[in-house]
Every structure is written in C-alpha cells, then in structure tokens.
Length: 226
Image 1 (cartoon, one colour):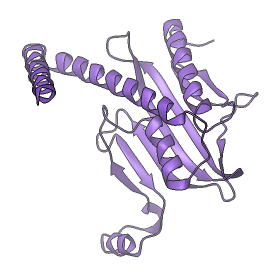
Image 2: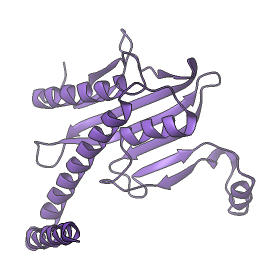
Image 3: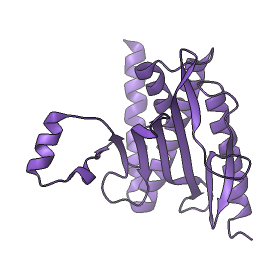
C-alpha cells in the first residue's frame, strides 16, 4: 500500500514519459525510465525489471565508455497542484571503475548550494588549498553552487555537456530536442519563481512582478525597433 497521492502518480508518470522521450531522442537507446512510488513521493529514474535502479550506457564512437545516472524525487509544491522536484541527481560515470566524472545534484531543502555540481578530478592547486584548510582526503569533493532552486542546470544541459565535452554518440535531431526541452524547462521555472514571489510577499509581490513584466516588454519592443 502507498500513501502517494493518485494525482501525483499520474502527474509524475507524464513527467517520466517526457524524460524518457528526451533521452531516447538524444543519447540513450530505449531508456528504461519509469516512475516508482516511494512512500508519499514518486521517484523517476531508470529501473530494471525487478525495480532496481540502473545506470544507462552512453557510447563514444560506438563503444560503451560512459554511464548516465538520472534520478528525480518528486512531490507537489506548496499549492498542491504543481510538480516539484524534491531531489535530483544526474551523473556521468566511468563504467570500468564505477567512478563518477561529474555529478549535478539538487536537494530542495538544502540551505547552502541546493543545486550544485560535484566535479571528481585531480588538481594540485585545489589539493594544496584544501590541505591548508584542514580538509582531509575524505572531503575532497567540491560542491560548486549553480543557479539555485529555480535556475539550476536541466537534464538537457547535462546531455549537451556529455556530447560537447566527451563526444558522446548522439541521435539525428538531438539539438532540436534539447532546445525544445530547455525552453520548456525555463518557462516552468519562471512560472514557479513567480508563484514563490507571490507566496512570500502577497502584499507587494504582484505589483513588483507586473512592473518587471512591463519593463521586459518595453525592452523587447525597443530591441525590435532598433
């Protein structure tokens, strides 16, 4: 038995289908993306037939050289109507040693660097600074804050990163699908940011938003007229 809201399960299932379509049309063949209930949350990721989490293979010049890990822990936002990501992880992993190259992590309730990148690489300069800061080898991973809750990297950004930096094999038309998804992601995040402003400051927030919209519209009008 599950405590997850049936409406949440339906919403997240639609989201899982979008994630699967993005991967299938860019870098992964038949991605095993699905939605699984976990208590009162729903997790989107790649699962095998037994429901175990799996990483997805990426090819470079036809050879399996990287794995991609994708995971979203989903709930509804404070309105109870809109999908919210409580936690997400995107990772590129070297399969031979099971060692991540880079991770893009998000933890919604984290006070500092809720969205951050963990880069797993050697650097003598960073090692020198960490040693003088009293950091041990166990705390080597750096959490680099990126974009905050609303403007953090999307899965589209991670896919394009893998293609550009590691020359991962891609599908025909991948660039269009990435751009379509990125535009949709940004629109959704702007709408969510607007809801946040109104929730946090119901007295003056709407007026400030209207002013910002008017300024943006004027800026666009001026640029078109140039």
